[in-house]
Image (cartoon, rainbow over all chains, first blue to last red; front, side, top):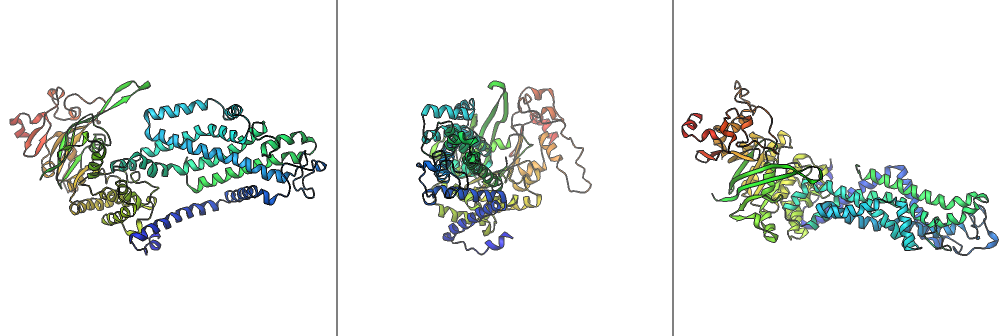
Length: 302
Length: 329
């Protein structure tokens, strides 16, 4: 059945490259099609895209200054005229602050996962592929980090490094490296035993190309899906650190610190106080649902 | 015909480690195996599962380092080579693996699976793909399969890809390690014929490893029978299949179901008992625990190789005495 639509290609060497691209497109098209079939994942992706793009376009969308407010308009309720999401305790527009704050919150969600994903994968792949003493050194060192609960370790590191978004990113990255490395290591160990690795070795390939073409290609989707699930955890962790006062310094908006600032108003204007929390919740949930959909679409077996 | 590949007293034992890395003993997988493969001929290696056939193949490829012995490719010892010299020799000996479902990278297209070995050896990617196309055609895969991924291929088709990958480096020797045992009977026949055709087309020497006696008989010029890491008998295929001398070879051949009417092969000296653990192989002759002709002497030392007919060697104490041997033959 598949033969029919691929039969008509010619085989001159110049077309070979084109054909390869065509085939790869169809595999990714298949993944996209599978992903779109999952309605929750698809809707979550759209919600995420809306949140992302409106945070990026904050200066265009928001009509107010995120740092200065009008003291007369303090604590306006949700749905007030001119302030759809109300205003905070200093009279600053909530929507504006949510949008500007989202930039930092999302950065703190994604950047540590990227950093930890790269470093952790590298360590895990090296440990899993070479095994022996290299594996023992890398994996046992990373095991030390497991002795501390993740949140405690993050608090400890960011307290040591001091306040600021950069330090939060560094702290959470360090927390995420061991689990990523562990996943990578176990995935690589499984692939390393396959006969195609032996075949590659016997054809004279060096370790670098075996890792590049045979190992990484076979563990990438698993690592990728794992890392996407970590984004939501990272986001919540970063907001938590900010809430505790370890993150962004006060006038700057960030979802965690906004939650902290508004917590005194909970008896005065309860709806207002939960807005930053709501955004953290929706974003984290949407990320998780998208990564679930990705897992199914990529057919990853645990 | 000159000898292209020769193994001399190859030996490999795998240490078995117990709790806290304490040595619990060793598995003697390959023990003093010697053979020679003549140019453009086929050597079949038969034996039960676990007798060290696959280990032997990997020792020859240097995928596992042997403890002792030599592997001579055209008279040069592979085991002392390193770096680019080894890489060049490795290209000359390629292997087709047992399981077509694990021997092909599922994330590379069929074409790239084959082309990978080439571009690893300094051929440009487009040139490698062009050549890969040629060999995919040589193994009988339609052009349209080249861009597909292995998941859409059947077992037989995958094995063809694996053979094309072995051929693409233009080797002189192909080691087929149980290359057809994972395939259906009808597909087996196709792949075996493919091996025969390719062998003459590309003037290959073939080392054919299998537990299937019929397959080995069909493929081989010479046959070597292994039992628990040792060679018990070797000779021309015709000699061994017509006049097996070692009690193990006899029992093995008797166990092959016959299609001939009225011939019962069931009661001729069957092998009793289980294959002993290679961790503590029996002393002396390793087959003595299951041998119907075993005598006390078998336990004391390993029988030397005795040439019973020209080109046919057997390691059995029964043939040490020339007079007795005549009766048995």
